Every structure is written in structure tokens, then in C-alpha cells.
Image (cartoon, rainbow, N blue to C red; front, side, top):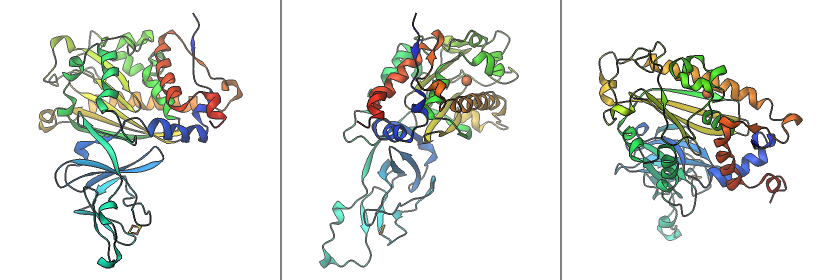
Amino acid sequence: MAFETTLPGRWFYDPAIYEREQERLFGRMWTYVGRADALPHPGDFLTVDLGGENVLVVRGKDGAVRAFLNVCRHRGARLCLEPCGTAGAVIQCPYHAWSYGLDGRLLGAPNIGPGERLDRDGLGLHPVALEEWEGLLWVTLAEDPAPLAAQLEPPLVDRFGELAKFARYGIGGLAVGRSISYDVAANWKLVVENFMECYHCAPVHPELTRLLPEFRNGTSYQGIVGQGTAFAGDIDGFTLSGAGGRATLPGLLPTDERLYYGFVLWPNLFVNLLPDHVILHRLLPTGPETCSVVCDWLFTPEEIARPGFDPTDTVEVFDITNKQDWEVCERTQLGMRSRAYKDGGFYVTNEQHIAGFRDLVLAKVGEPAAVLAGD
Ligand code: FES
Ligand SMILES: [Fe+2]
């Protein structure tokens, strides 16, 4: 059997390819940018670099979250510089003090008289499409985007065979018990590919494979419909010690217990389902050879409100696993510029499903020859 080949090394460091990827992939797909509960009050905002733009996501007075290009319509100043914060009742540009409502409308432009005929109605912030799904905020810069569900549901059905099995986890009703941010010195695609396979699990993740021994055989199960990974027979919970004690998530069935499910919702959300909590990774490219990952550990609000709630015992499993993953991704990044990797590498049998991700990138960004020719 011929193995599928990876993208050429250049796809993992070339700024021109990165720029094109931003424009054609992140600039057109729905991308997960943050949690809705990170913006609890009107005026709370976050900003994100996406598709060559900087996008401002803000909760309005009516409770709705909206997204806009983070650019003042007057002379183009960036409105909010911080990654997150609170704008207050209006978004005011610090340059000449134009002010915008939280719904993007231009409310005030100082020292412009009525006779100067400023078209205030036409000078609101440029809207960006935003949808909330399971408590997660997704935006797209596409002009006339298909609904978010059209992007998310097919891979969920591919993974579970049905939507109901995933829905039982009730992710939208969970809250963050712990969050850790990581900077990774590797191209974002290496991080996606790494998460999609468990061929590396035996050599890289002794703690994870202690809890999920099936991973030692190198199969990720992500390419197998409906297949979870069984807990080791002698553990009670997904904690470093194997101790249990947390209540099972309310929507689950007995058949869901003692199983781990991992999968990627392209382009940038990694999902880890466990019987008593859920772990989500938000991956965002920060440059051709760097990316950032925010990892949220989600629990029921009741669990978090419990006196003495401390998720450390389970957080440390994936915190250790994450750091091990970043290390091998960064090690791989070091090889991308070598002439030895000019034509790329290949995916072995346990990694064949990653070819689907490679094909997505090619479909969005273009074939290597076309990209390098600048077409
Ligand atoms: S650039 Fe924003 S008010 Fe002038
Ligand atoms: Fe890993």
C-alpha cells in the first residue's frame, strides 16, 4: 500500500504560503475565536487576528455578541488594541474620538457640523459574521457565508455516526474550571496533524497512555466512526493518579462512561470528551512558524460551585500531554526547512486520516505548484 504524502516542508514556514492560507482558509472558513462566557457584560470584548484582519468581538447592550473589523471608519485607527477588555457603553476611537455603539453604529463624530453632511448611517463599523455554537464564538470573514452548522455537523457525523451522541455531552452548559495558554514555536498545521494521530502516543505520552492504554497501539480512533478509547481497567477517573470522584455529565448514558473521544473540528478546535469533563483547545496561528493554544477544562457549574473544587488532578494530565505535544511539534518545525523535507514526508497506516486535513488545506489554499507560482 502506498502511503499518503504530507505537504512539502515549505508549507510549514513560507510567509507567502502563510499569507495565502490566512486569506483563503482562515479568511473564508468559520474559525473558533473564544468563549461567549468570556464576555459576560455589555461592552466586554475580545480581539483576534484572522485572515489578515483584526476582528473585534463585543457583547451589545441587548446581550447579543457581534463582530466587526477592528478599524475606525475615519482614518483607520485600530479601535481596541488589547486581546480582551471592556469598552464601556460605547467603543470610542482614541485618535479623534469618533464613537460607535456596541452594535457598530456610528454615534458621534466631534466637531463636524450638520452642514458638513457626514453620512453617519453609512459609517458604522464593518460587520463580520458571527455565530455562537455550544457556548463558543465562531466568526468568518466570508462575504456570504453558509451557516456554521454546515461546517461543523458533517465532521461530527463523521466522528460519531450521529449528532445525538456528541450532543449528550452538553458542552454549551459547561463552564471553565481552568484555562491555560501556550505559545508554540511550530506551524499551526503541525499542531493539528499531531492532535489527529496517536502514532506518537506510546513514545511521547506515558501519562496519557497509562490512563488510555489502547493508545499504545498507535491508533487515534479519530478516523473510526463512533469509536472512543477505553479507560485502563484499574482507574476510576481521568486523573494523573487514576482516582475518580466527579459526577458523570448529566446527559450521558452508561455506555458513554469510561471512554475518551478526541477529534478536531477544522480549522482550529480540538475537542476532548470525558465522562465528567470536557477539554477544548483553541488553536490560532500567530505567524508562519508559531501559533498559540488556549486550553479550557470545562465542568458543570455545579461541580465548579462545589466547596473545595480543584481540577488540578485532571488538568495536569492534559497539561503534561500538551507540553509533550508542543515539544514534538517544535522539534518537527526544526526539520521543515531542511532539503531532506523539501518534498515532505508521509503518513503511515495509523495516520492515513490526516490526509483529509492535508486535502482541506490544498482545497482552500491551492496546489503547491500554483501557490509557489503565485497564482
Ligand atoms: S481614526 Fe478614529 S476617530 Fe479618527
Ligand atoms: Fe499527543
